Image (cartoon, rainbow, N blue to C red):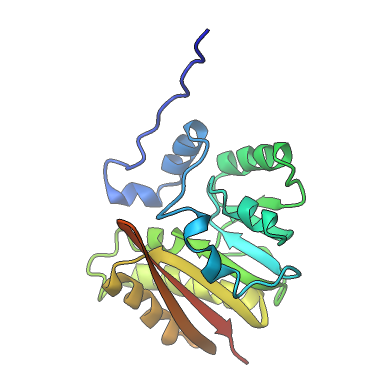
Length: 218
């Protein structure tokens, strides 16, 4: 007997502004088991692992239903915490991780603009495509709307707060040069100290920009 096909979900919403709507994500995650933004872990594994020691405590913001945390776990990085704003995907991720032998990974419902963690508690914070969502309805990418800048700065403030001194923030974003550069500009002009460097990789037809920043002294 043929297995019934899982319900299909349109990946792209009707308008880009729907990416900012929590209801869109709940509906999507209810139907979708797994999706990787840009490319999967294998395409930037060599870039990530140079910044993460096996003993590191790692926070992934906006995990969605990506397998990034599972791949990191397989590489020996076991102190992992994942957060997402969607309660739907949080519950599904808990079930998936438990069934795949990754029950040590913590998955929490939380907002990256208001992280519910103590100061200086993670060695690494990583995001893949999460910051891009903040820019989808920002107008001119060179001069985004004030509300967009405010959200990005709130995210960076929270990331900086939860990172330990000299901790690393890894951001994987859509690799159009001007968009990736704009994110770096916002980080550079923030009021916190960052020592930054950037590594870019091109994978077949999909470009992504992986940048890493070291939390400087206050």
